[in-house]
Image 1: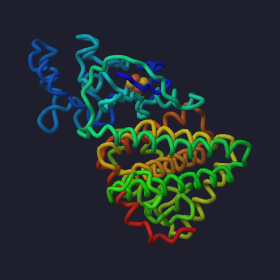
Image 2 (image 1 turned 30 degrees about the horizontal axis):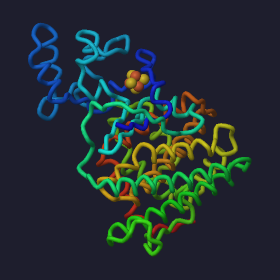
Image 3 (image 1 turned 45 degrees about the vertical axis):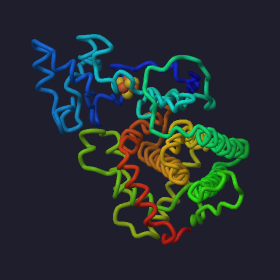
Image 4 (image 1 turned 60 degrees about the vertical axis):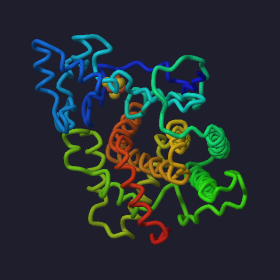
Length: 381
Ligand code: SF4
């Protein structure tokens, strides 16, 4: 089978004990059926430890309360792997941070940026591209859609969207930061319009590329940055949770700093403060418009083919706009609080953000709903 791999896929190497944000903490670590069968057959002390560790709904979770995995060792390694080898931990742990999707005609393999080392490789990659290999795949087909003509059309739409970002990359070269942000905002507007047209065409059974698809009316004057009202809804209403202090402390610190700066402000004052925060940030060397463009592009590489299942062109691009805006906000908050933003911190911010916001379909759904509740009513600047 033809497999398209993100260019830096093969460079991944787990940082193990040196990892600043281990994947063995902060979210649910679940044992799959095959792993459970192995664990239930285990005797002796390891068997007892497994029996005691498996908790949660239906006793399949290895880390109670989404805290640290019971088998995480002092040296930052996996105790299950150490005891019984690489094939012994749950399949998700064996595969992470690799994302592998097989759609029938071909497969795509990328890295999950909730892994800080994958995020570091992503930031260091000069551009995103696929590397084509021909191999057998060991994993099952993703989703249930078998309409290969639609899949081919979907890939064509992605090329068109990547073309919009490619043009934006050319246009921001040599521009001042504020001007570069405007270019990105316009690229997002164009992508939303295209996605709206394709969605409308798909819903009414027209050819996907027919010109007449109306697309959905869009309201914002700027898509990058978005207004403080919606950022506030996402931070306070969706992302914040007191429990993050224990589970993902680095992200909790970013959220707390947002609250310190923005809580209690009315909309006008909040917007003024956001404008100032971003203005200061874009003045600093740490701001790189290319990075946000790179991140938006990675959304198309990693998540766009989900549209094969749900035909939700528009929501996919809305998510791209939403996550890119929040990354900008958290970068700016970090730089404001500490006075700097190194490449290692950038990678860590991406990793903790993705861990919180990208790993639950419900979280993304809630964030989109919060946004849609605002669309058309929010007084954009
Ligand atoms: S987050 Fe990535 S680098 Fe860190 S322990 Fe997990 S796989 Fe390794």
